[in-house]
Amino acid sequence: MKYLDEYRDAAVAKGIAQAIRARVTRPWVLMEICGGQTHTIMRYGLDEMLPPEIELVHGPGCPVCVAPLEIIDKALAIAARPGVIFVSYGDMLRVPGSHSDLFRVKAAGGDVRIAYSPMDAVKLARENPSRQVVFFGIGFETTAPANAMSVWQARREGLKNFSLLAAHVLVPPAMRAILASPANRVQGLIAPGHVCTVMGTREYEDLSRDFHLPIVIGGFEPVDLLEAIRMLAVQLEEGRAEVENQYVRSVSREGNLPAQKILQQVYEVSDQKWRGIGPIPMSGYKLRTEFAEYDAELVYGTGEISAQEPPECISALVLQGLKKPVDCAAFGSLCTPERPLGAPMVSSEGVCAAYYAYRRRVPETVA
Amino acid sequence: MCLAVPGKVLESHEVGPNRIATVGFGGVTRQVYLDFVPEAEVGDYVIVHVGFAISKVDEAEAKRTYELLEEMGAVLEVEEEQP
Figure 1 (cartoon, one colour):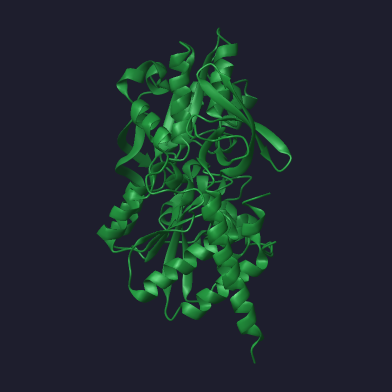
Figure 2 (tube, chains in turn yellow, red; figure 1 turned 90 degrees about the vertical axis):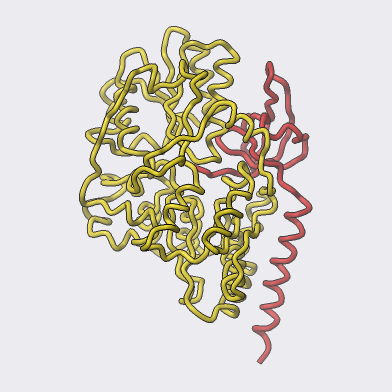
């Protein structure tokens, strides 16, 4: 497929890896934030193509993984209600709440359905006027505009049986929290290309200046990621700390203005709790009060549900790049994709799931 | 979650206030909302996430950067062959 296959070309990938080896003179710790990028790195063994000086640590960019336990418990409570059609992205179904997960609610008779797009949930509401349809809208800035559009569309159509259970998280505030930590090891950042496709690159310019941090906005294919790593290595070796864009075929400095407009119309920035990390000020979105009738938390009065993480799970440290999944005593024994303790083992983009899938066998070669 | 895939706009039509396109992904087609990329035309490549196009692929930039990357691979291959 165009714009995919050529970015998996082995000769090009090897050339870039060699250029990195030729350029690096001392150790550097780089973080990729996005779980999709983590999976590409693990799947193609990109970390093993790099010189030993470059260490990759993995960030919190898996929305399924950082959705707080409380919101999962709220989802389970709503999904179990008679008359509700609960619609979710597929990744959320096996994420463990305090006592159950959406699959088990479904098995017990709850009407839980998987959708590819939030607009599919709006369609379900249109087609089932006697039922209440609730969409579980999780995601980073990439997904938030689509989720916002579902609310916008429901209001435009006058649908009274649609609501959104929102758990939106924002990348820059989380990165600030990680970089400001005394334990921080990150010296260069691969910024998430699809988040930046929507939001543009200005927020990363602030981050780069405030923390004197080189940042390269990277794509998602092996060649993209190796080139982003090379660009970071060059900046670090030259003592520069700038924002550069490797993913120019999709990302512009101003980002996607129509998507940003719908975000502003439907959401306001709010404090958000991150699973494993804790509360981060102004790091999420909630629905504006004018959309209160579409806010599932208000419609169903889920109120305050508080929950405790399993003590064996070290996802907090893993999601901040302080530990690797293999450093966890529960990894692959107590905690597996079939019986996950924490969300990073569940999601197809979770870092523990990536290590479990690709680090117990030989990685795929770049095509 | 932020998985987004490039596909080619094959046709587009209006449904109420929305413009919806049929987008081809190497033989598979999907209906995609163009609300965020209203400038997309038939023949353009768009990057699609949860049923919405989030960008139009900048073909000129893609070509330019890829040629630079290929060149890097080619140059290094030549260097490797040197004794």
